[in-house]
Image 1 (cartoon, rainbow, N blue to C red):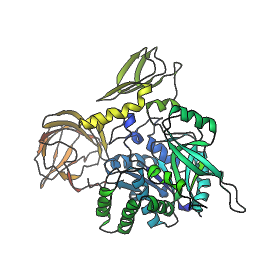
Image 2: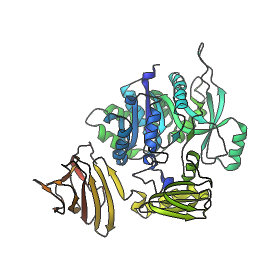
Image 3: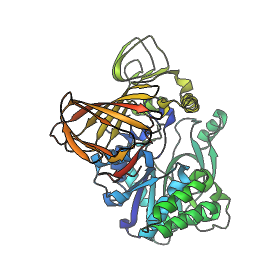
Image 4: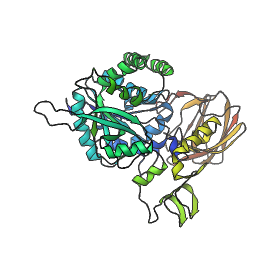
Length: 489
């Protein structure tokens, strides 16, 4: 098989709830800068280029995150628009992987997929590239390959893979160094994890896979037939006027299941797979899934007291703590083994031993229908950004910044009106049939159910204050008629 048929598929649709309050449902972990000056997604894109050409990289994300994903990807690489696959609903990784496989098999029947989470860290990208090449040979023989990480501690937050018999190389070829998978264990207790560490036959499940698109679709057919029927329907509708409608209808009927639990963990039990099946390839590539705030210590520098400090932090005599300040000054004194994370609208303080429970806070916010689990006060868009300054009963106040020569979509709202006041720059306004400009300290009114558009015709950023008024002020009250960025929702 030619290396040209390798496609990197990056899964970028998760919510990253364990990194709240920095991560939000619409701005999850993969969009954060947790290491250096690049986001997790951008680092993953650079790593993916060790496996596939930039034209063969695909990103699967949720429709509501697609704007931010596209913006961040554009900083790293020029990806054609059809390389972004937007799911209408979050249905876990089996659906995401299956959708990408169906699309790739349609475009290239010999496609080999390298499936990568967007929110993991790989510090040794060259080693990753070598592992992909080795796995590619196995995938060409029909194997479904998962990368295994040698445990260095009895970790209870990871899934484990038990290796079975060593794979034999075809006649005249180099031994691939992999093993048949003997079984899976999901997040064992501490005593079991210690036993696995001493045993030597167990690996952490990295969540990174290599396989032919046709092979994983066949495995899905055998173990998730309902999902497979939906994927085939989508595959047949690709490129037709029914494509979008079909994807919507299929996703609406799918169960939420992971590719690990729904497919891979069932493969070792299938004794009919004598020559191929599921293989594990041990890889030392500096991997971490950065699963919670405490994982920051594994990938960040610490000071002489064992603290990780990011942002505008002043600390006196704290030890072994993680201190993160987004914008405001955070001062800490004499803390030990704590996590402190401060953002514009929320602050987290917890013991490091309870870092995994941050997701429970997010669940409580979701039940309360609080926006703090969903978005930050500042939300980035392809045309610029908006910041929610105040959110009251039947009104909301925003600061909107529009890049030079950029414009918002032509749109209307059914349940709110808007007042715009120009703070800096000049605004070109479309309101109904009128198109006009307003300057500094001038204002305009956009009635409910009126087509409108905001545009910056100038060479400097446009900044306006928007006051919304109405019975419902959610971001989903929008009907787009034309958009420069291809958005429909």
